[in-house]
Length: 177
Ligand code: S3P
Image 1 (tube, rainbow, N blue to C red):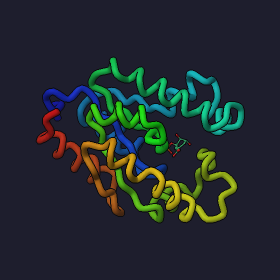
Image 2: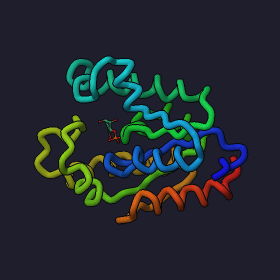
Image 3: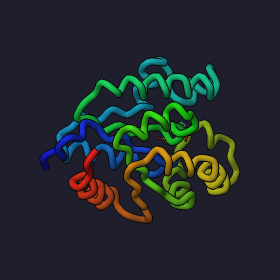
């Protein structure tokens, strides 16, 4: 599929388990763009995985990397950028995303929890007895930020990643920055 004219990159935001990386990969393949996953890049720079960064440098240390890597994407083109779910916890990140094409994959805490059932890679859900409740709290804190940062809002409600990717591609066709 030809890339929509005038759009250089697309940011993907939303709760953990929303499918940002999976849908991002489908979009990158469809458009023949590169995928630049912020979490993966942070792990490369830090030389540690995300749980290790949280353990050694705390959440603040992780958030510093997150903002640094987000700002580095400014110079990129033809790129899909899945962001970690907490990207909207810093106002400067929201300010940046507002100026770019940002897609919010809006997933319910119930659906996200089901997808994350076997994940031990999310420090914010560590030792959490009730994942749905925890994700609900996180979403409550971030919902306004997601809505503020996003230019495109997609309700993922029990849909397959390729159907979601198709909806985004259709929306991008009509999107003018
Ligand atoms: C986080 C989400 C994770 C990762 C880190 C913190 C969050 O990314 O950045 O564990 O604060 O919601 P995903 O949304 O890709 O799981």
